[in-house]
Length: 610
Image (cartoon, rainbow, N blue to C red; front, side):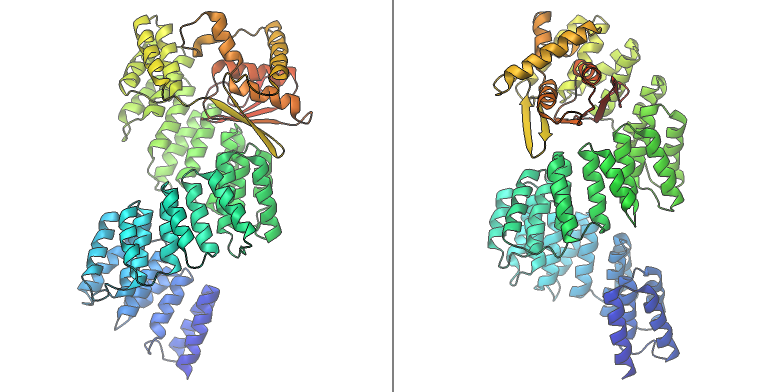
């Protein structure tokens, strides 16, 4: 009777995730002398695991005089729940060796889950082989876990093979397969499977929508979300909202993001921490950093993602000192930074030339937090050194770092050579970069400028020929501007727009005024062989200028003009937008392929280095 009572209390504790209650119940069980009685020890391990008390679970497990399959399944599951999948796999050998127990279907499911979390497909296949040779080879729960593992690791055909072998498919197997297809760009197969789901519930909708967002198909995700709403699916779990907020961020569609934010408030999920995190990130990526700060300021509970999102957001918007101040608050709040936090911090240092602070942070991430710098960290640190004119140290870093430098890394150093007029190093870096056969068109413009400054005309000609060849596959430049619920897309050289004459007239007036104030067109970014006035004409019709002019004509006077461009802003347009911000007394925010530019009163937040 007493055992049943404690079992019931433990089950309630597990459901409510109350750690203190779990410890109190354990103490009462010991007092009653029932610590080794029946199912109580295994239930306690399970309870400790679900309450996040992994050390208590492990201590109890180690003291058990007899451990069975349930004991092992409970402790392995506890390690998975504590995000310690490597320990789940390492403990498994003890089960075979110390307790001489072979894995049952519950243990196998835990092992597959660990492999999935780690992305360790080699060990995952070994577990799969063990499963196939075991008496539990027909267990549908293990098969569902295998579908999830293969789908997350990108082996969709393997996942589908296991999926098709499941006699009674559950919600986990359906959602894992749909999500896998959608996440890896196989939309038609995801859609076909989605139509065949026996019961299309919130979780199957979420799997499809989230997968589309992760594969960069944000527009399709929005259409699917609208269809889900029309079908009246009750959003009892906010994960789908987090995904669709993420789609707004990726598309940089502020008005749409605001509408989703309104839905979040209506449904009562704004206080949910991962929804708030997504909203902070969305507003920052949609160029409204003030709204991002407001949401962050209202958060009652913040985790490392919350702090990192606002640090990275403020850094990307050129507010470097504020980003560093927020980091100090984060440390004071006893929140441990992660890899992404340091990317934002070093990036922030590069914008204001804080070399010593950047060095300290680069060193601190390894020594204080055990985070090994990635290629992205090295590239940010290289950018910091390069911006500050410490080019020799930057070149030594690129040659000594434990990663093979990629095109953006070399391009960052080359850009700094151009900025600081170090032609000798620039030629050396340019030659190496050219040998990598770069893919980014802006890299070729940079190469051409460096060679032209050095009067190496043969190499200039070679770059231009390569650029001409690239025109076939070069992505056309376009800029998008959002005005309320309307958005317009402008392509470079576009002359068919209904407001073409008004846009041309405004740009012509602005051009006249800019020249009066000292503007001289920078035609170095136009590599085509044509007369100088034709090159000026090409610059005149760049997509960001068209979008900004349209915004000035249509937007409410005094409002911020927000433009998203798919390519990097060229040097001449950057100068032009600074002039326009002064002449029109308007703030202009441009998100290009590299960063955010806040143009105001003739200045840019990037400090003219991008």
